[in-house]
Image 1 (cartoon, rainbow, N blue to C red):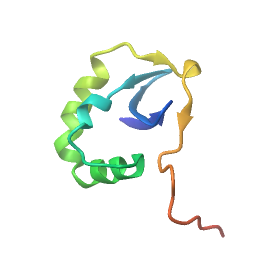
Image 2: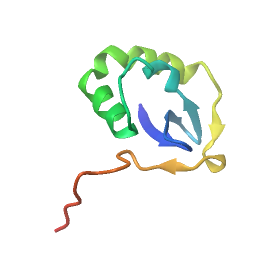
Image 3: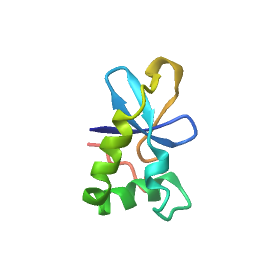
Image 4: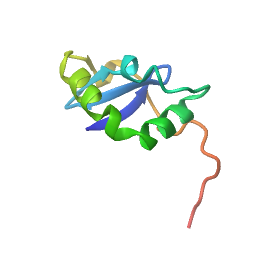
Length: 82
C-alpha cells in the first residue's frame, strides 16, 4: 500500500495511476497539521491497515494527472544532507 498526501493534504492510497481518497478512515486521529496525521497513523498503523485497504478498493479514484501530490511531511523539523 502506497500512501500519499494530495491537493489540500488529503490522505490517499495510490493504486496504479489512480489516487483514492481515504481521509474519512483517519478522522479519529487528533491533529492540527498533516504532519501529525502521518505520525498518528505510523504509531497505530496496524489498527488502520484493514480500513485503509477496504477504502482503497471501494472506489475507482481519480487519475494522478488530475491532482497535486504533496510532500509526506509538510513541515519537516530539519533537513539533513550529506
